Length: 552
Image 1 (cartoon, one colour):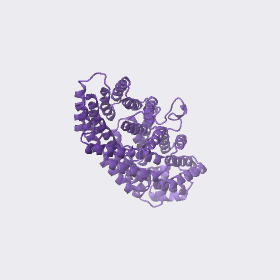
Image 2 (cartoon, rainbow, N blue to C red; image 1 turned 180 degrees about the vertical axis):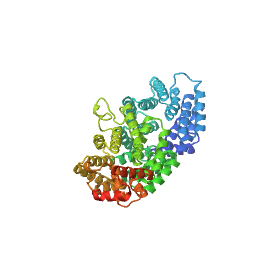
Image 3 (spheres, rainbow, N blue to C red; image 1 turned 120 degrees about the vertical axis):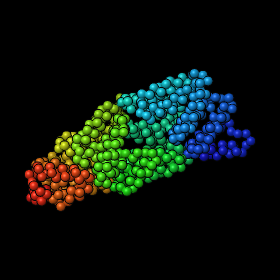
Image 4 (spheres, helix red, strand yellow; image 1 turned 90 degrees about the vertical axis):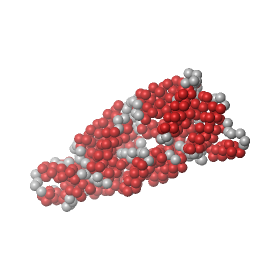
């Protein structure tokens, strides 16, 4: 029987027959309503089930209904009602046996609160207590929920390999069909979210495929399908299927709207904004990010990178600095630091870029398995060993910082590692971005032939993806003279050569800032450095020098 058939049958029985539904039937009605996205109907049926269990002399079942009401109301943001139901459950539980499983279920809200506050030690302790109760009482749902929370808390504390192992253990119960429908969906979504947070891309992909199959077996189900589509959209984006990813994100938003889930819908809009930004559709990205923010999701780091793409380096810097100042959890900071590196380099603040890169490297080292998903069967996949998402981000950032500092050889080594990691992750856009920097490193070392190959590969990838801004940059780089090799750069950095060429073309500092996505103050500094290094007195003299030495 499908969920809609079960809901219709129970609803008809509730109104047609003389006697009300039993407590068990009301719980089944609540489950059917939840799976169909009928949130209000789900809560009403669960309240009725609570009262029916009390009337039937089953206080423990009534307590469990009260606990779940508190949890679901809290997830909806209705904190007052949630607190009321949890307080009722706690008061009722004081009169029940000390070894009942409901005491373990009452630890779930405590686990959620600790995790939301970033108190991993508290979440771990509560989860361990809940797991012990679940094992004694042989309750599969509670055990899986507790074990999965233990895994997340351990991973956030740096014990990534152990934590991921516990997530996998929880998912064994999920995929074996041992759990109730709602707990199954909750665990699918929470574990996949956790894998993304931990940069465990391969696991996220594997569990997303399993979640997709589970959803497809229940075509009328609304609950969890939106989250599934958002996860699919994120993976599609990474693998270069941008058009399909945008469609999935939009479908996810529609599913969330049907279910009345505002915050997850905002997450779907953020994903849309990311895709629009990468394609150069900046106005559409702006609208999507604003919608995400109104829905309760801070659109970062995308919004900061959008400001950079719009030519407002100061706003981009202020946004990413503020976000980092408010973020303490290392792995959450790791989501922001690559953008911080990119923005700092764009505005000419090499010191800030180096600091952000160094912190990203420390996080990768401290969370040894994060992003690498290493196990006893895959010792070569550790951070720095190639293939991990976090190691790829570190390699790209390290290469960009080294290149900006004039150390092309160090940049080349880091970018080769990053490129290989992106290849293993099947991430064409990120691979092309690293390839573009590889081209600049090769050019700085005088290897124009390899630089041309890297540029051609990057241009082809950007064109295939529809990454208009990156393609335009690659085209500009490919169209420039090969005269700026290591032997005839005249002591200028790669960025200073870019500025000199634009000065020679008659561009004002404001126009140069817009072209290179820099602040005018940074351009002023570059122009001063150029004049000082070349021992010139004016922009006119710099223009003449550029033409005389075939730099344009």
